[in-house]
Amino acid sequence: MKGARRPEVRLPALEAYEGGEVEPDGDYDGVEFAGTDLAGQDGAGARFMDCALTDCALDGTRLSHARLLDSVLTGIRGVGTDLAESTLRDVEVVDARLGGTQLHGAVLERVLVRGGKIDYLNLRQARLRDVVFEGCVLVEPDFGGARLERVEFVDCALKSADFTAVTLTDVDLRGATELVLAGGLDRLSGAVISTAQLLDLAPVLAAELGIRVED
Image (cartoon, rainbow, N blue to C red; front, side, top):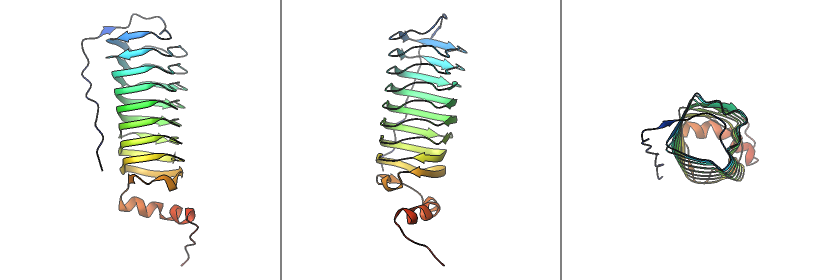
């Protein structure tokens, strides 16, 4: 089992965001967004490099095909944030409160998601490499058709996760404080779980295999 490589983000001196709306295909380098309301704005295709987003509202924000590089997102919140087919590389997401976030088809590499709660996270067909979910709660995340390589769940609750058609390589689920699968039980090859988790999953595994358990 190969462990995930965590991001090592060292932000330079940042310039405060001057306000106004983010722009499609915009270029933001070394910018600090502090308490900025980005709700409903369109930053599709934009590039954020060496940026900090702190306590920002992202309700309905369109960031599809965006690139977030060497950046830290702290206390972000929002419903329906669109990050479809975006790229996150060397990014830390801390204490996020998100719902219905769209990350289908996205590429995540060296990403740390620490703390917070994310409901209905859509990661269908996404590619995750060297990603750590730590101390967070994921409610009904959808990994359908995604490829996960060197992904770790540490002190993280996975509630009704859908692993349908996923491909797993060196995925460590042993640290999950709660592991409930809504689908994809047959796709756990390439993952490692604990003995206690195996016992918890035993009834579902038996049902999946058509085994009747009677005393």
